[in-house]
Length: 313
Image (cartoon, rainbow, N blue to C red; front, side, top):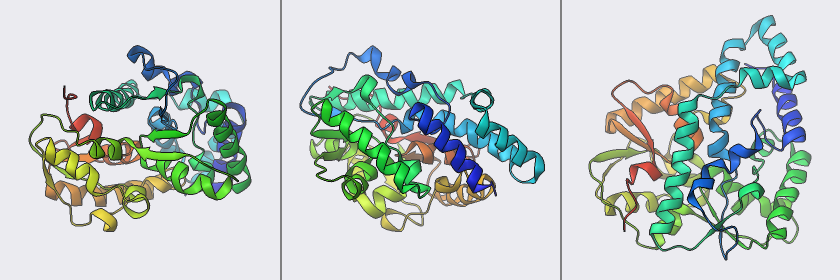
């Protein structure tokens, strides 16, 4: 297991310097949207919270942690990484394919929303990381400070309603921020809920098994909506042994502290999913990273936004 104090130090240093938990340039948060021409102002805003964009960098850091996990050399490497930002940046070089994939998911979400008739704006440079890792690590003071900055940025832009794109950011903005920010007032809905409410459908086919992310299934009530979206669009939805509120974790929450254990959990889950279908649909960038890294060659792991195919209309 990785030394917790060292991981905390790395995260806190990058959050302090850049507002991001891993070594990534700020422009990765909004670069995906620039070709789409999404308006900058409107009544409702798409808020990504940065998790999809940061996933390739997180994945690169986890691969490095797997190599240094345990032993004196591992502790030395982690110590250097925590003190020398340049070292960590050199190590955490994201896979270009993952970068392209993450950006394609976000663009697909935006196009589905537009095709459904939803009018929305995007924050571009004001799209900030939600701070979820600070909360998960129990760094309440740091999390509260960061959450207040994010909320102030949103309010300064006149934002009252947001559409989120992943379970971690949704949980933060809908259930956790209100507990830490006095007077918090923000309407939060996932793009999945929005599309389902609009009766949205595309034209696709085939079968697939859904992997329910823990936060959607256990805390945010986003369970039947993705199934309806897929079924309406022509996909035969299969269920694994453990699904809906009884879903099984992808291994993601501990990937930065115990990467080997995280992989073991991911393999258990992949085995369950593979028995239901060779096509696995996820709704979280962390689930995608973990499950795709252990998927056998005959299994496709794909995000819901891409599994819906081309936008209708």
